[in-house]
Length: 70
Image (cartoon, rainbow, N blue to C red; front, side, top):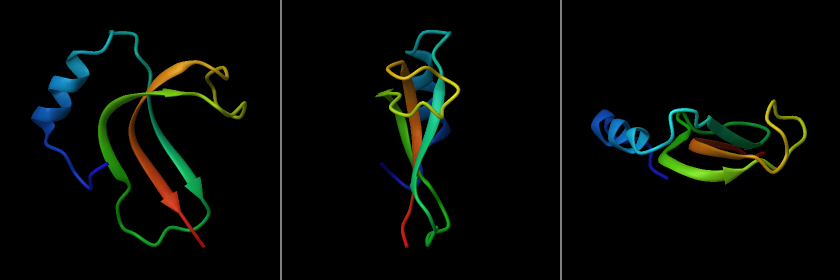
């Protein structure tokens, strides 16, 4: 994952997804030591937590991740 991608890259990648695809930004850890989350072109991600609004085992598309360590 990168610190940034271009709007054109994201539009192209999003255009390839089904119109009902769900987009998410994942997170882990506790405290943030960086200014930005990581951004990525959409990648399939299987929901692992029952705390999400989407059922466990569902496929969503991750477009970023924030890791906060302590």
